[in-house]
Image (cartoon, rainbow, N blue to C red; front, side, top):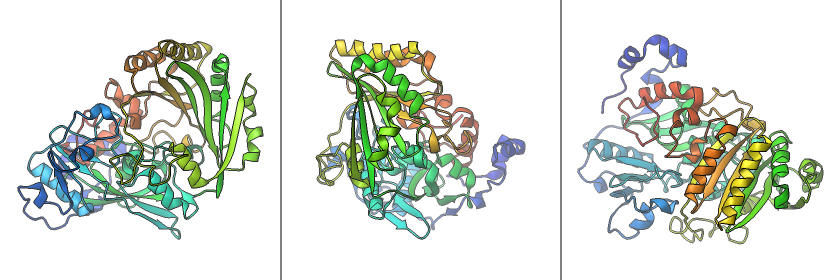
Length: 496
């Protein structure tokens, strides 16, 4: 593999193009590279790395091969490598490139489109890179790429701090952060990627790079929302930490189905604009033929404030409210679906010792809403769920509230372009894939045309614009610089 050649890059791009994209200072010496002395690459992967290598027939291979979404259980790699550290990751990448073996990196295995597994190739499973190290004086935490969110929350909660992240307990921190990372402290603290200050990454030339605003600001820009798998294998990330109260409030507001359209309207006019300490999710769904409508959320303040704050929602006819106060980590267990499961059990079966959460098959799509949905759009949403309920099906439209800290950065401040949204819609089902596609199509007139890159969608035809908007050309230029031969590839990888 050739080293990055700045002269070749300049000649193909033009110095003016680099200046336009803000990459004029992107010399290889500014990439923060650390290349250990090269040594001969062994023929066998087992001889190339110190961590375990599982192959078909090895004990535990099915659990190692499978990702969370059971729809991809038929996609089996030839090898699953579990590096012990960054050096092992580098050696696994070098081995795959030298032997022309296709490979993918996996932090938690939650790629919606199954891009963290590859048929007959190599999966570089980062689960052993999971250390969480807090520096209270510097106000940062450094986290191994394979750490799962529930473990991150647990470690941080002992210090009274957190980072903004998602609710699914077994999602890996690297995959979440690289695609943005929305969660239930988002309106208070922003995306997961907004708190990212440094990353360690193995690039296609076999080097390990320390990426920060000082060493390579353009690459840090790209890692903050440019999507996992595009620029190399991230092995470690450092984030600003945020203090949280010892206790936080949970709330759930339910309405009768007859008030569904009015509830949507009240929520969309309130949730993106209310107190920044509130982040919430709106649920419009059918569960085995029963339609329901509710919103659940988290408030970084006392539950006694909620009657006043929730007044625009409780004014909708038939509203009922439940509020609870929990210690902060206990609340994260609730969001993880672990209210009645102990911490050890709040992990995926087969992925962690003692894990009790089953894997599941699912289908998903997404949209961003940038202006209030009209009465006709709300009627389309309600009618779609009613039609599914009449057939006994199960699916959901889940609205994640934006606004607050999520929307303060400019769309080009980081690679994450979705800074003008009111909310993000996730279309989600275990079984009703055709319904999902039909509903997504029916809501085209009311959506912005953008989509969330962490809900990556293999069937999305205009994904370059939908995920990255006007930031895509800059992402391509950065990709060409750090991986000119596009060694890191998958069906929706950034590139020309």
